Amino acid sequence: MIEDMRGRPWTKADRTGGLIDEVFSELRELVPGVIIERLEVTHPADDDNVYFIGDQHQFDRVQVDTYRDGQPSFLIENENGLRHETTDPTEAVSLIRNWLQQS
Image (cartoon, rainbow, N blue to C red; front, top):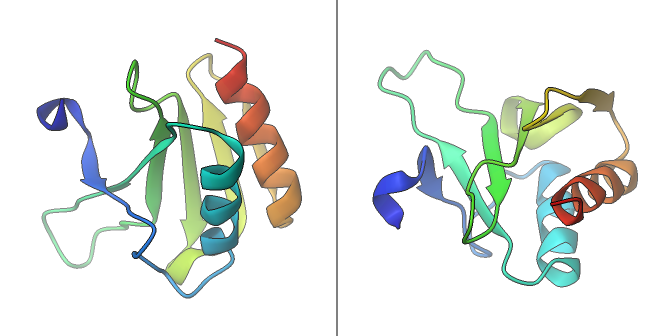
């Protein structure tokens, strides 16, 4: 299972210091079995503020890009190519949760 991931597991203990932490905490409460991973980059200058959200059936159903240190705005994309940008953590949670529940 781990070998299929695109990043490293992002656990409850992992923190960015930004508002994306609130989004992930809320998702963990609302979506049983949610899996969050963070892109691992090979060069320190590469942008690693990319997260993949899914479940045990598919790891990367939703992708979230943030500014440095997990700050908004959040660019949220789903597996069907839909995109939405928001600075509101509550809106981000709602959208991600809805997209995860659609499949």
